[in-house]
Amino acid sequence: MENVIQINDTTWRIEDGHVRFLLFCGTERAALIDTGMNTPNARQIAESLTGLPLILINTHADRDHISGNGAFEEIYMSPAEEGHYRAQNGGGKLIGVREGDVIDLGQRPLRVIDIPGHTPGSIALLDEKNRVLVSGDSVQDGNIFMFGAHRDLDLYIESLRHLRLYDGLYDEIYPMHGSFPVAPELVGQLLEGACAVREGRAEGQPVEIHGNEVCLYRFPYAGFLMES
Ligand SMILES: [Zn+2]
Image (cartoon, rainbow, N blue to C red; front, side, top):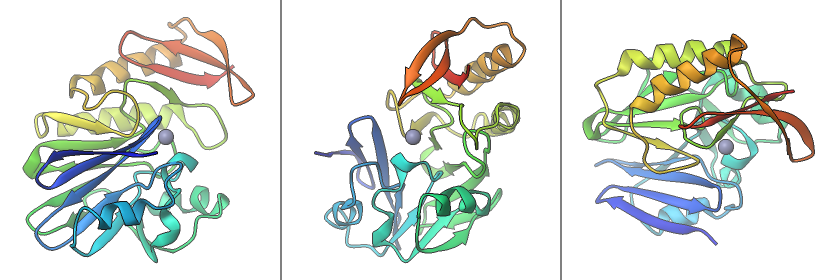
């Protein structure tokens, strides 16, 4: 059963076990950001919290973020994510959003930042007015999944470097897994860790995830699950 937590007058997080999704309201419309793993009723939950017209934005299309997408005809998503989304029978018409685009909810512009690597079309959203960065799965303090066909560690490292250009524009990061919120410093820490993994400077240990033998590189601030 999901747990709805109000953050402030215009912002909620909906917790569903290991994953969460968000509801951001502006003056004109509201945005559901992802739809969780076991919450096909995500739209109903959002509509019980706000009467504003509702749009859906996906940070990325992994299975645990799209369970309620079926209730939406249109979905804001990176065009680079479409293949991955459709491969999981994701439906609806996609409205492509990319680096530099702004989705305005009415006095609450959300700036799109491309951060591919965890998935081909992962995006972050910068809520500049509230000084919050929505990071999806790419910046969080749990174990970040980087094994499997559509992951790319080099791209991920590039994306973290790119994200650093936005340093100073936000005070808190809202991730979809792990602690909530996390501090902006985590971006630099993950960058260091990911570079250490790529350059063979980190110690990994074998673990099993959903029947896959993978390698966990655990740092004090987060972990990476890599191909073993
Ligand atoms: Zn996830």
